Structures are given as C-alpha cells and as structure tokens.
Amino acid sequence: MASFFIPLTGLQADTTALNTIANNLANMNTTAFKSESTNFADLFYQHVGSTGAGNPILMGAGVKVASNSITYTQGSINSTGNSTDVALNGSGFFVLGNGSGSYELSRAGNFSVDSKGNLLSQSGSYVMGYPAVNGVVNTTAALVPVNIPVGQVQEPRATSEIGMTANLNAASATGTQFPTQVTIYDSLGEQHVVSIQYQQTAPNTWTYSASLPTSDFTSGVSIPVTGTMVFDSSGNLSTVAQGSGTAKTVGTAPGDVKSVALSFTGLMDKSADLSIQWNLLGSTNTPTISQVATTSAVSATTQNGFQSGQYQSFSVETDGTVTVSYANGQKQSVGQIALGNVSNTQGLELQGDGNYVTTRASGAISIGVSGAAGLGTLQNSALEASNVNISREFSNLIIAQRAFEANAKSVTTFDTVTQDTINIIR
Image 1 (cartoon, rainbow, N blue to C red):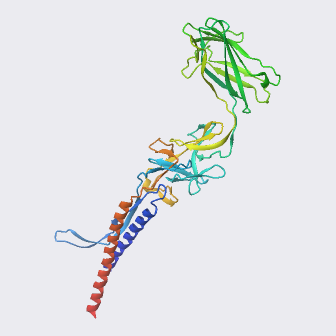
Image 2: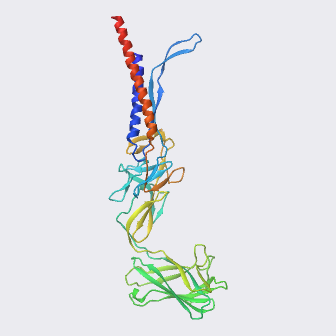
C-alpha cells in the first residue's frame, strides 16, 4: 500500500519539522539558545521499468528527515548589570567541567557563585579556566575551576620599592632644606611614613636623609639612611653615594646604581624588618629626581605595599581574565576563563541546559583564550540572547502546516479511492 505509506512518511517528517519550530519558539527567551532547522531528503526509489530509450522508470518511496541542523549565528548582547553574567561575542564556547576530567561546551554565560566561590554554569557544572598565582595567569597550565575568593581577606604586602618624581630648586641657597614623605606598609599591613629630608650643601649637590619616626621602633631610636646626590649642569641626577661610600653613576650600565637601599629593623609592631629599594630611575630608565631653578616640589610618589583588604567584587575582562577587587583598593587576577571550539559544530550533541558534548563527528575540543585562535571576546555583566527569528519561524510554521495538511489530504484521498475499489468488488 505505497499510496498510504508515502504520505505517512511525509506526515512523520512534517511532524518533526513542526516539533523543531515549536522548540525554537519555546526557547525564544532562553539564554544563548541556537535555533534549529529540519532538512528533508527523499527515500530510496524502486525500479519499475524502462522507457523505449532505455531510461529507467523509478518510483519514489517518500521522504525522511535528513538532519536537524543548528544555526550558530550570534545572538544579540544584552546588558544585565550582574557581574556573574558573561556574554560570548563571536565563535567558541565556554568550557564546563564536572570533576570527571571530561568537558562540556556552552554558550550560556548566566553563571553563579556557590558557597565555596566556584563559578558555576546554570546546570551546576564548573566554569573552567587557567589558574593564577600571585595575580599572574598561567595559560600553559591545566584547566581548573574558576574560583572567586568570596569572603576572603587579601593578606598585606610589605613595601619593597618606593619611587619619587621630584625637583630640587637649583637656585636654593646653601643649607636650604626640602622635606617630603612617602607612606609605606610593613609585613603586618601597618602603615608607616618615611620622611626624606633633602639639604643643599653646595651647588648641584644635595644630601638626603630617610628615616621613620622614633615611635615606630622598640628601641625608640631611628637610624636614618643618609647619602649624597650630585646633579650635572643640565639638572640631571648624575651620581649618588650612600653614607660615606663612593659615589656611583646613576644609570643602567654595569657598575651603575639604579636605587638606594633603605633598611629599617626592630619595628614596634614586631613585623618583619623592612628592606626597601628607593628607585632612582623611571620606566624609561631616566632619573626621576631633577634639579632646575624652580620651586622644590614632589609631583608623585609610588610604593608597592598595601594593607589587608576584604573581598568586595569581581569582574571579567574582555580576554576572560577574572579580576577581584578588595576593600584596600587593590585588584588581583585570580584566573582566566577558557574558551573552546570544535572543527565541526554541527557534530555536537545537545544535552539540554544549553550544554553540548563532543562526538566523533564534531572532533575534539580545541581550548584557548578569548580573542585568540579565532575565538570570540567576552563582555561582563551581559548575556547573549537566543538567535530565534520569530518572523522566520512563523513563516516556516505555515509551510510545515500546509505540507502536513497536504499529506493528510493524500491519505484521505487514497482512503476514498480504496473504499470505491472495495465497493466495485461488492
């Protein structure tokens, strides 16, 4: 009864198409959902004869669903204001882990943070990334779950370097003094103030004395670090001597001096002894202290220490770097979200919850970072919307409905023909 079988295959194929369209419409508001389309193919043909010219006469057997292909076009990016939301703009997927060593892929960036600080997908899987040690991300290391130090306190860091951009007035009279200060921190996060006193002792020659208040020491005695600075005829810092030592040229050549060593021991709060390098050169390797005929002044000071700070928030940069902010004003990278892709995205298998797994058809996951190897970039506090086009879906719905009705009409027509044939026999 091929007359019944052929339209039945059409009804089955059209039902699949209608289900696909219905699923697309149902997921219009699903984060990063990718719409599907049903593709048909004709079934095998039966050879029923040949023409006089030898051409084969073939009779079709109906239709089948050839594939349900996924449309991976970009969905619109919508801002949410939620720091745990991350949108992927471009190719690739977020890499998710469940602790078993295997990975899943997802476009949905509506993440959350659990009680242990792990960044989780909407299905509860770990968001995988590259680890960071002391704020430095290692993209050659194995992937680990991205962890946010929620509720943790950043340990203090003792100052090990200071710098100063200053000018000493070349027109000052001999004996003129110019005091300035730099705030530093010890290993316990306690704040101290280094007082630096400059005094002109001769033309183009100044002494310096760096010290902490006597109240900062258990002995009640502050021993300053002293020395001499000499400037050339253009006002550039030329040589520096520490204590009664030999003056050395300021520069980067072998034997030159780039910094002055400051050491303070026996602090009142029992913190570790302070060993600080007072950098004399800036980022361009030129001296930051000059001497010209204008008012003595300090335009900037720098130091690399800080006190402890409570976790406040985190953000995700466009390259996937996860940066944490602390109450002490410090920011630190704690990891970098990894992205993955496969050579054949149509070969991925849908798992629900916006997740995909690889198959032999898709190929293995190639893992990298945002913006590299053709992978997209990330946008924090935003989500990718579904790419379902409602106008196209309704058009497809009408076409599928009409095809279904046509096949159903074929069945009823063949039923009428069969009934008339039976009536003839009677």
